[in-house]
Image 1: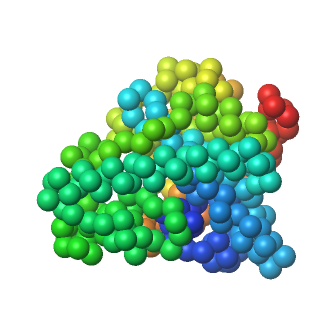
Image 2: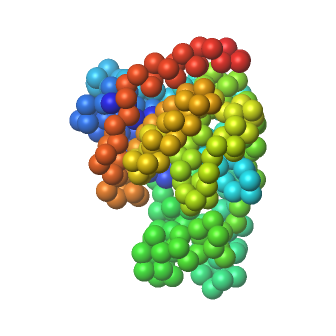
Length: 283
């Protein structure tokens, strides 16, 4: 089994890259791809673990895009960590994230929930701050009872404290990823628009914009969702990938490699992904 979607404390997970590599080995995975949001910051530490583990360690990231009025996540799998242009582009995205974070702090203050940048930083182990860290800060200050409640009441996509950030178009994200030697893949499409969305036509639009694959196996899919997305990819001739979306303690009960318990991502998907990488437009 493989896992091509997971996070460390370099974005919104709780484990170090080193710990992630060891967990993957314990789970007897054959390959693991780290896909932190908007950063390759954890990649050097992850790859340094390769001599100590049997699992093959791979490079990726996860970018946020604007699609049909909502946020769509795109995985950049097998990108080149030494690509200076891609690293600069990720730095720009982190600047946009920081601007959004400061505007969200101001919005929350207007709603009677004043927290500071320092409050949020105290909940994170790296400079990249996400809404997960906002939620923890809001809980620590007593504005919500538990961090998940912050997403339900204050900072979820449709909530009054949410502030969108400037996001890429799917075409732009796909181009960046391909130019960095990777494969652009639609992440967890079953979670887009709260799951109540039919993808038959929309995925064709994304394919025309340069997306080359979709996440057919996912840590929180129901069996029917998995069957639907794997079949959709086959109809469109898109590569299928899969992963747990492991976040450590920030997603309790979701395990690396097996998700909520039923995830099994076949090894041969990686072979097809690497074939797609070799045949890509910019390579």
